[in-house]
Length: 102
Image (cartoon, rainbow, N blue to C red; front, top):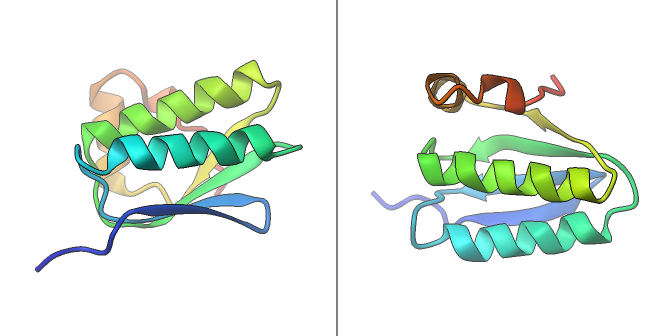
């Protein structure tokens, strides 16, 4: 069974990430997210509740987004972080990087 195509959209002040992110889709998704972050005028919540995967490429993308937001004087907080993604971040000594909004 194939998961839904990965996407990121800006909805009600949140970056909403959905679908299945993998090595093939992460670069386009990262670029789209960066475009939306640059357009934002305030702090953002990244909603991961529709994310179907927890993979190291997802963690890398989120950290890139977080760095870009910080460089722009904004903060990203995360909502809907799966236990698997939180565990992956903790195993990588990056657990503190996913500031939760929920």
